[in-house]
Length: 196
Image (cartoon, rainbow, N blue to C red; front, side, top):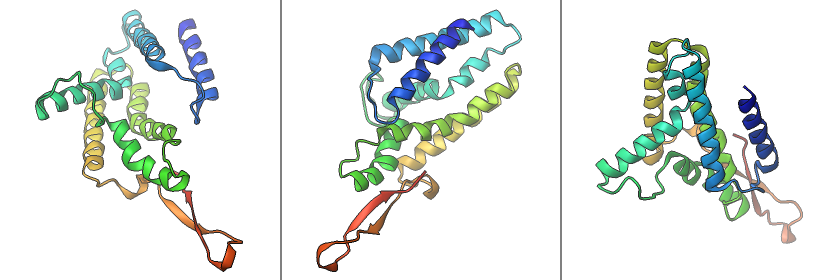
């Protein structure tokens, strides 16, 4: 419990100072440390509390575990490449490229300042799995079914984004608003991002 609170407090402090502008860089070492600590806490929770299903930890970390397995399958089986090679086809990268960057580029002329807007999309994707984990922490069958539903949801979202068939409610749009006081009376267009 004490280690959980320390990790949560450190991450909350990091989030407060870092979101959404990215003022502090966690880096690979920091990300690996946080991942190790969270995974170790999940293993200890399941090991020390026999009433907690081992599927609890797997569903709780369903997104990163499935993303890793799916990326390996996609690279090795579908593309015939090494699973260790980098690529830009991970779900979070596709969300950024196809949902976030177009609207933010129209608003900011670069589109790269809105990288943090990718996180809320991933939070929404992971939320059903987290809720199911909290509700069914001791029921292995329910956790397994919830994991299957999460994987199906992931695959549907991934396929729709890859095929450019993203549901319209997920797309960040920019709208044009006329500027006042433009020389000659012509209205110039300024793009403002809509709220998610």
